[in-house]
Image (cartoon, rainbow, N blue to C red; front, side):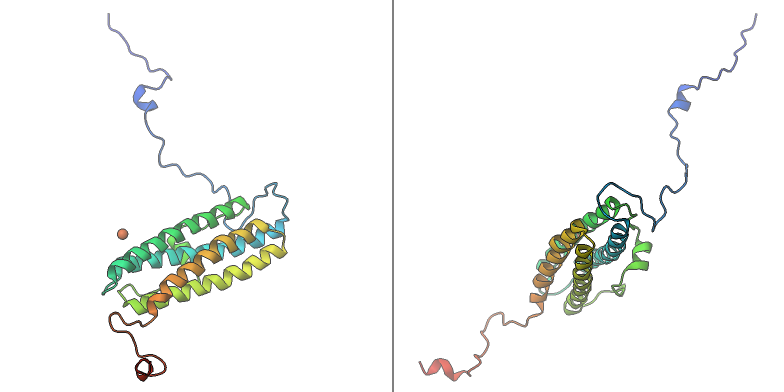
Length: 211
Ligand SMILES: [Fe+2]
């Protein structure tokens, strides 16, 4: 007598352990659309804030990456301190980007994230792939900071006018203050300062001799 094995509908163990990869469902929210949340804010206020924050996000991600590029490519007598300072600012900009992106989601929007989408949106000019000297690196960073600061202050005023105090607070307390402070720290590196011998006084070298 032979035993006949019949197939049942019960899956084998190996089937249960099989990851269900290679799936691709529908997009659940299109970029540019808005989901509504009970935030006590008008839809128009949310939409305006999402649009403004998207611009600041794209520029913040670009500035973040500019700091990382300069962190890697910096050179010269101030290499070590700038290498560390650029990394610190990179990390602070990365935190800012996260805060901005999460507010876009909170308001019902869709945050951009990928490099190609950021490149399409940012207003900050693309730097060369090659290395630049320190004054050029810092000048490029300062121009990017100023661009973000102008945009963020205007967007903060608009958000306050529309009643979106949360976005106003984020833009002022986080974006403006962080960018102002970073601009101060790096701009001081473009001041020509004697390293060993004090410079001549504005009244001439004879000023000290009269005393
Ligand atoms: Fe590093």
